[in-house]
Image 1 (cartoon, rainbow, N blue to C red):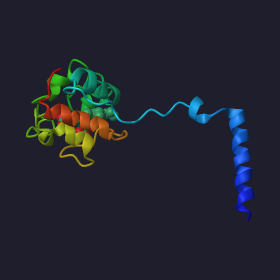
Image 2: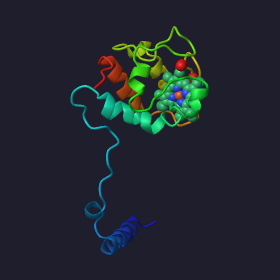
Image 3: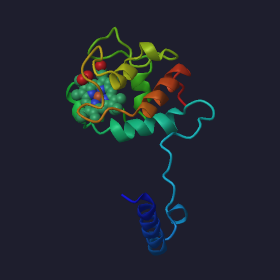
Image 4: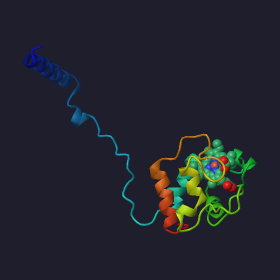
Length: 149
Ligand code: HEC
């Protein structure tokens, strides 16, 4: 195979494509990076943690949600903080949802991080596992003292 002729053909085709579509580096916007913006100051419960619950948990963990048949845990805005921090699991009272400053001892974290939590199933139940970024936000929020901020 004649490489020089091949390259020439490819180069010609590419230039022709560029003429038709324009320069891709100028017209195509760069993909948005997946990473979260750099965290400045402590994680905010109301603006960073509650939105995770709103999107992935609250439709079951609401007054009229299906989780109520098994556990009384509400993760709806205005209810979730008091339900979680220092509160025992309804399935095993020796386990605490959120132990302020101790994510390793917090059932909330094991329930979203582990496929085999100490009680029940991984959350969100029946859904896609929580992203590592969201899990890390929850971990950081707990280890920073589980502030109601
Ligand atoms: C499809 C409905 C559904 C979704 C979505 C869901 N849960 Fe649950 N959740 C349940 C049910 C049912 C239980 C009780 C059985 C169990 O623990 O596996 C439960 C139990 C829990 C418990 C333990 C309660 C206790 O008293 O021990 C925690 C903590 C929890 N969920 C957190 C979450 C979080 C955080 C999310 C979002 C990431 C979430 N859940 C999403 C249905 C759901």
